[in-house]
Length: 306
Image 1 (cartoon, rainbow, N blue to C red):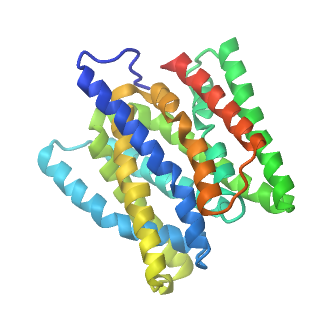
Image 2: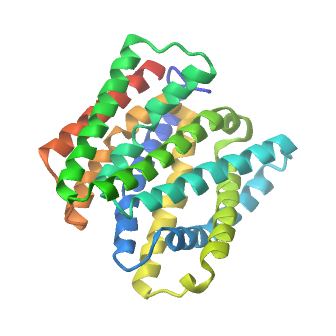
């Protein structure tokens, strides 16, 4: 994986990368909140994901055409297949499991579980590329997973339904694993084809695949919704999908995945506060302590690899 270890010779470019990551993190942090608000309108995971991708598809199609005009150099067949597979894996499979999990757990717990993905990246790199896991890495992993379990147990106590909390957490954990796999595999592809080009093509593939899958599964009846649902889906598609996807991939290409994990450490806390404000989700010291442990673990892992 291409990971810059020092700021580039152009400080302005480095600053742009930092801003991209921070803005992308803030927008992604609001995703679970918007999804939960859509669920309150009667939608379920698969139809909501289909509507999200339908609204996002035109933007990625236009961006893909623009990128093609700016950079007409053809990609190899292997690169095309890799981008399609990575797009479907991350923004298709991972998103579907994430949406399914949010039907059962709070937005705060969802974000905490998702945020442990950098530690999974660390474990995957150790397994596939034989990278050494140091004592510092092990401590980071311990912090992250203890924090996640703390929030998980706390949510079970609050919900009173451990089966639903367990099921939702499992779905989100699957989403986290598939996203970590995407980060590992995309680390070599993004620098080769460019962040904007990769994002446009990968998301175009994901949107197409998700829409076809959901149409086959649920039919076209879910396209008819209330104006409030359309507003929520538009917010989800544009401000929690299209814009942050370009921002994060651009940021990763500049500052690297390790630094990205460190800069995005405030994401779970933002989601916890937004959940308490907009969804009346509980916000307790135990949740904040668990989120803090996860953030500390990820920050340690990121600093090791930054």
